[in-house]
Image 1 (cartoon, rainbow, N blue to C red):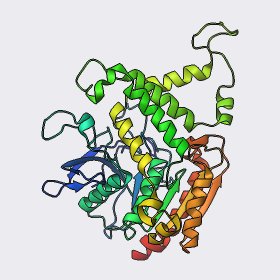
Image 2: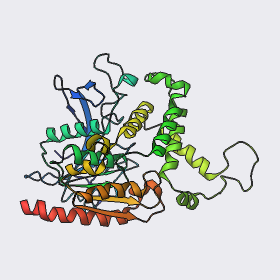
Image 3: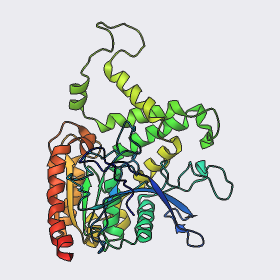
Image 4: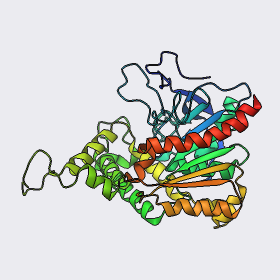
Length: 394
């Protein structure tokens, strides 16, 4: 089952990894989506790290953020210039210690890195779905992840962890399948987006659909791609990931390649060049339609409305797992008060929940950058579970 080969390039690395795929929701057992439509078959890209115990009690599911994918750790080949997006947390001796745990990370439904989404061929036409792909929700993503676990023969999870959109998925898991996870770690996330976050998502979507090359989503296979719109959307989104303090520390008001103002309408400040570089890199690895679908899925998510008739306290009655919630002081995209609202709702139901707000200047990106603090916190949380569940079973 593991996708990791043995030629590790470093002692604390999972080494060279392979992204695999499996197919779920095969007709006639198609998946009924929240929007009312059905979808199937569904391909899911996933990676695993470590070994599953014979008792199948050491599995941890990693739920990626908005523009992430299944490649959480390791490298795909020896010359791969960049490891997986959470390589500093997954591997031997790290927070998600692959000497202990069996780690699973899937690309979400609707993604563009191997899972069925707008870029995938529609079985009915053989052409990419584009805008004929059904509208998705966070719940739909979680339903597919459950089908993946079923296919892998995993009935219970030792834990699950997700940041940002991944944290929304983790919360949905706690509410939809409370009997599956023994614990969950929710990082820099929320039970529902604020109007401000929805507004930023809409501006990004508008940038994409206003690009003449978007072609109403039917740009696949053409020589006209909506790169400008997607790059602008990424630039807008990236600003929300940072904080005023981090931007001051990183760029200040420094000029790029000059000492004085040019008094012209060109890129002069370092921060301008940085954002354009972020946009240019992003269009090489992400799909514009996928951006539309995933941001809309986040906009729709409202745990209180979906599970508690508008009450988050009532929704959290369903939770059975031990939960760790972490927020970051400078995160203004998913501010700490949203994490505290979730913690309060869990405590009102006498649930086993711990909360930590980490002082950080990194903004929303802190859940990926505050490595040393998160390492200690998550390692301690998982150590207790490992001692009481896995070692006890052994």
